[in-house]
Length: 217
Ligand code: G3P
View 1 (cartoon, rainbow, N blue to C red):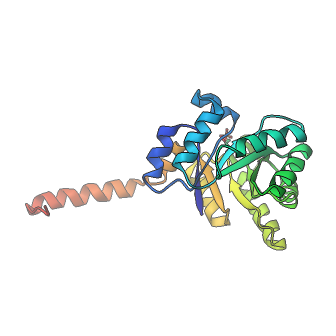
View 2 (cartoon, protein in one colour):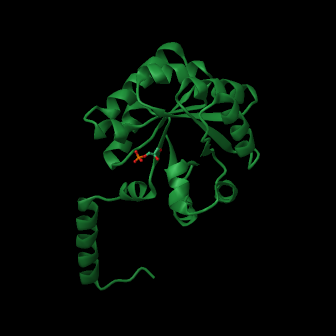
View 3 (cartoon, protein in one colour):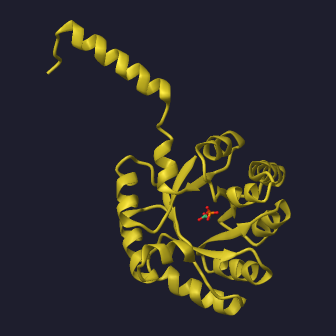
């Protein structure tokens, strides 16, 4: 399973990359706003740090304009995945941009039928938003499982990019279901290491080690 960092904060990306935790990066207009940076500049900097796909999102609503924005974003670096919304215009843009040979991430996916359309449009990635479905008392994980089944039934190659992952359980459940990629904020990725029994066990071992009076170095 690939891990993408859902952030446009350079410091966070560098920190996670040192742990081998950044197979790619996803951004969106809200994350660009949070970074306080110019979209082209910050995306270029991210692409220079990460060799995997870096998603950069278009902001127009009409297909022609999305295509123009997507082509401009793709000029930033060879590892850009153009992110388009799951609308008819977004799907049209997806079809054209993938025909251009670009990677496309179809985002804001909230149903299995939408994911089916993204695959039919040739998307490289589809981004179902787990957390936002949970927010309205639906089951985000059920959607990931449904899309996995549908894509496997027909051999669609579009990669399932589990997005809006807010908890470590979202990540382990996505892995169990077989999502190809999960994207999560750095704070959630860092929590993956935590376990109370690891901390307790380490404390016990170090206490006993002290009693031996030995040194390794
Ligand atoms: O990857 C999509 C993500 O940025 C949305 O997350 O937490 O705003 O639903 P969230």
